Length: 471
Picture 1 (cartoon, rainbow, N blue to C red):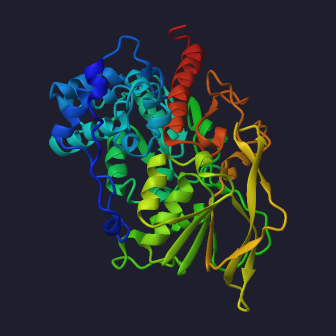
Picture 2 (cartoon, rainbow, N blue to C red; picture 1 turned 120 degrees about the vertical axis):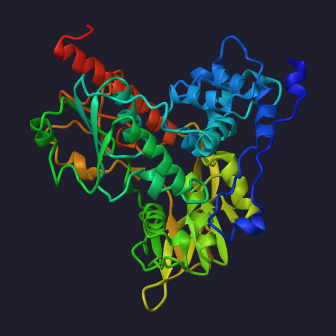
């Protein structure tokens, strides 16, 4: 093990900060074959495999890494897809450092194996050198019919898993294209739309039917889906209702929720300007309020859209920021400024109703709150004004309320989240299941995928018991 520990972790090549801050091309460039093999050879193949238990979808991590080390890159990609239908996405946006890599045995005495980078390498290699669709397990629909509502990570994963189990799956998406937060919430420079397209094609190759421009709850109700002959329904419509700051001036021109800002940029292809023109206004001086990945995405997007100065305002210290360390470092390298231990108290207006500044108060950290982090407390008399003309609020989202309001009797939590049985994923309405951000509120892509996978197996048990199969 000692020689493995001494081997340095292979860093993934990236665009230089002064170049990438002016384009929307992918920042991380991926491993070469040589880098991937070198990193895979760092894995000690420990017998307890803690990394597998650290993965929400249970990927056989040591096995696929061993295949990389042996040069069988396509075999490694197939091994990943036995448990994870969206590896190219996960390799790019999942927080491996707090999940599989956090429990890597090698990490106890050195740096953990770069599991996420290796997963991305496999998926990209298969896309370029193999046939990503050739090994798809296609459903014949003999087990029953299931409707999946929402084509984000929870819905796509649930649909894929059900197809593997032999169900005829129809996936309903309210927008004109698939992907949910994967397409409309994550910037092009972190997750290219072409990657989303490839992963969705793989799901379709399994026999999943996708119906676009169908707003379940309006175009068709849940009751009507049951009447059409669906045996179960999975709700995976995500967290689309943004939190607001609740301060004066929040309705001024030049104030966005991060949800609106990123969706506009992605939906209207502002990242392809000037080929696509789009009504996304960004001023010269932008303040982004929040410290998570969405805040980093918003700040880095504003910079690429032409802002001269972008400042992230966060009420705690850098150590408490929930964003991935990689994303914080990327933002800093690109010139994003951080104003920490500060919180906005009002947004200032010019005489035409546009933002001209934001008043903040300095904060200090007090006792720990329910999240385990020290609670930020305002410092009396410490108010100051930031000279900004755009404010983007990135302080979280609640579950999308559009669908759940149309389901009579559905049990909801205090914040509008759907309440489910934790073991099966079923709601209080028989045959109606849910998972992902609609249950938890805003969380990670891989957590939503894990919930979709668990719900698929809950649906299988429910339909099997009802039909007298396998019980």
